[in-house]
Length: 44
Image (cartoon, rainbow, N blue to C red; front, side, top):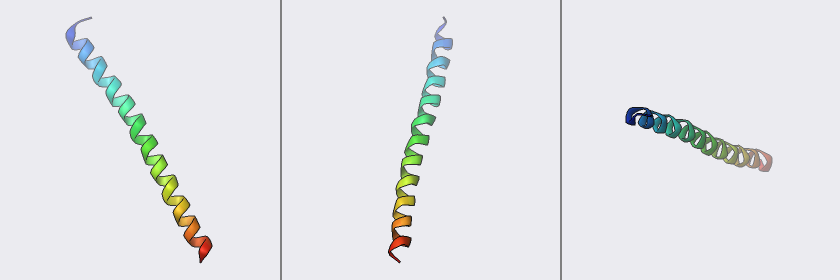
């Protein structure tokens, strides 16, 4: 494999895994905010 191909492969891997991590972090934050919101509605 050429150097350019390896660099492009590494870039693609970083983009895919980075997107996965970002999506998981977003889901965790959204779940936490929903739980807080539901708890507030329940107390009222």
